[in-house]
Amino acid sequence: MRAWTIAAALLLAFAPAAAQELVVINNPAEPQVNGAKARLRDDPAVQGGKAMRIQVRRRGTNPWDVAVQSAIDKPVKAGDTLVFAFSARLEEGENGAAEGTLPYIAVQLAGEPYTTLFSDQATIGPEWKMVEVRGKADADHAPGTLNATIHLASAAQTVEFGPLIVVDLGPE
Image 1: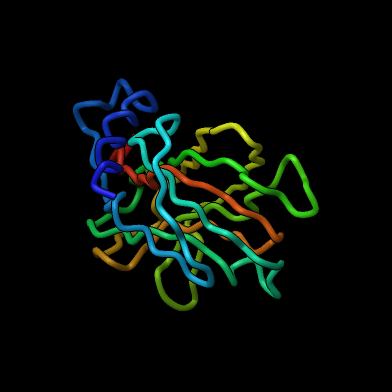
Image 2: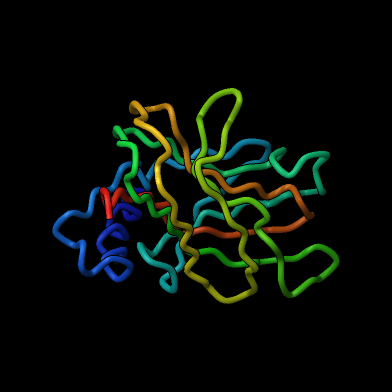
């Protein structure tokens, strides 16, 4: 998964004006998958050349029954603009669907009550798609108290991800 860290450089396309201040605040090479098993595979079409495949065998009782997340291991200051970015594609949709929805893409508290700082959703298909979710930090947060998460159990599906990258652009 070390190749995933190379992808951080590609994130400059999201924030060229802030390139000097770009601070990656998670470890893109260490995503955590809950509720399913992930498999790493080579894919030259995705940034970093590695894709993480997650098969959701059935719709969960809750969308968070299967999730992929990345711990934010750097401090975040109130008012900082955060960007959670990743590539994703639907390998196999429920009942042969060509598109799927990632219903919850968020930066949130890493523990109860799992309060969301900001979130969005995205529709993905068979081609790689760059997804970007932005928001502002509501308060100062110590390392390890936030994570970036994507809920997957809204459908039986197989989804692939490139590196999960979270950057802190500082106060904008």
